[in-house]
Image 1 (cartoon, rainbow, N blue to C red):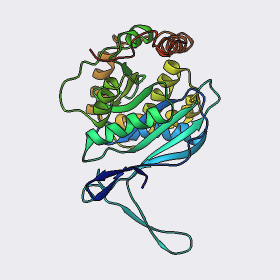
Image 2 (cartoon, rainbow, N blue to C red):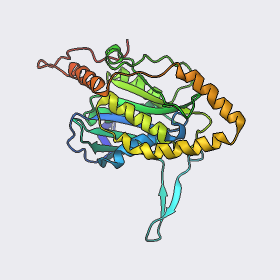
Image 3 (spheres, rainbow, N blue to C red):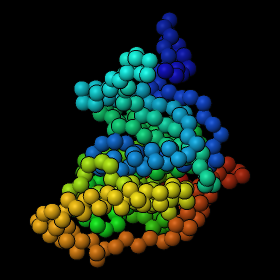
Image 4 (cartoon, rainbow, N blue to C red):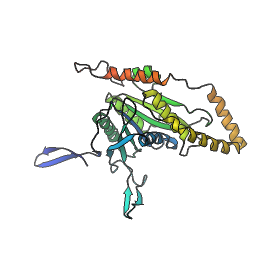
Length: 311
């Protein structure tokens, strides 16, 4: 583990030890941090699949990880045993991985994925803030997926929210309105706002009657909204055939049961009057760049506009 500065305490010397373990950070172009975590707010693993899709198609390298020892109850999420090619036994622990991803866009990415930990959410959120700051990220996007009463036959809606009023205005987002049990992402978002790091939350609605992974349609919807909002290319169109195949399988299952067909038809009628309408991707990306430009310190070292996302 990475250790901090030794502290003198009488005759005893203590060393601050961090669960956030760093490798070398490559030079990145105005990076943005993306984060998603497996758990109740990652329905069908749609969000983590979206970020893994990005890393698989980028020139990505590990730059850090968070040691799981103090964050997990291993009776709840057990480490996995496997045999390496040489026959030796290997234990894979549920660690959180942070990768730097070089893109074909004007900015690079830092991508954080893992399993939502069981313990010490406040400490974990502090590490996310540290990752954003140490890697030079200009902003953070947390990505998630929720089960909802939506039909599989219609485009999956992606909700975007932020606390910062300028982000809300420029990017056609909404202010957070949810009240109730929250996820790790909710805690992270609050901590980033307190640290004056701009943060956006993107959430896709997944049909509750097909909650199991994979769900390429939900993953594609998240990637598309992420690209339109940030201008970062995600190659979401490459999922079109997987979406077609997935939809055909669900269509076939629904068609075999009259009650299911009627239920899906009712959901279709409910959502058809509430179709999502967004500005163009180019317009949103330009507005985001303008917002981030306003947050940068001026030549006197002062920010041109307060970066606070909470009053």
